[in-house]
Length: 87
Image (spheres, rainbow, N blue to C red):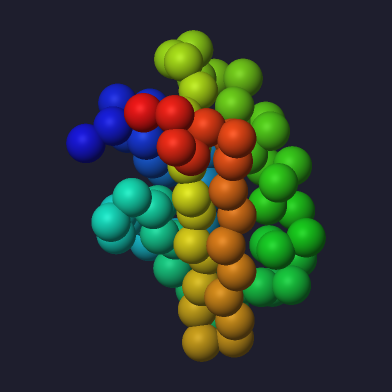
């Protein structure tokens, strides 16, 4: 498993004060958001949240996919898309 991805998971778990269920599926970080949270707001603010966390991670950047979902919706977010095939 990628050390970079592990750091992202730990950073998300440390920052997130809600009951997000954060796991791994394939190469993606999968986040199950509770139904009582505003899914549209999470989608709107997700890139900003990641930018804030990115400053905590001092490892070389890698391609990383996030899948965020619950029964209200699903979206994907990719950081460092230019690095997808650089391994």
